[in-house]
Image (cartoon, rainbow, N blue to C red; front, top):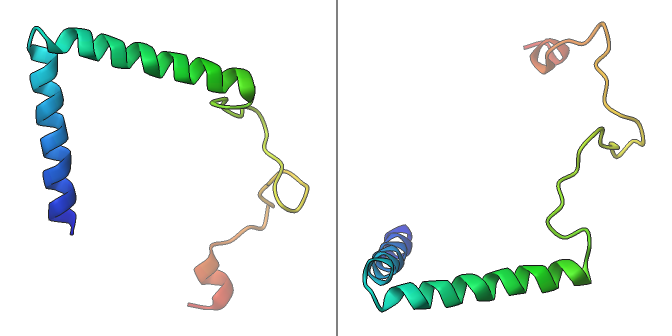
Length: 81
């Protein structure tokens, strides 16, 4: 199955390389790039959180930020291995 995926990806990459390197492929690449930019901008207008990266401290499921204690030990030590 992975071989089939690799062959399909290789075919896509080779076709894309052919289109980029040929003269008639340049306008096609420009049109596709513009369409992707328009799609990204319109999606961003609908949802402002789309594509944003969270920065700062994340809230853990417990409601507290994670902090190691002074007596922390590896899991193998706790189970006695």
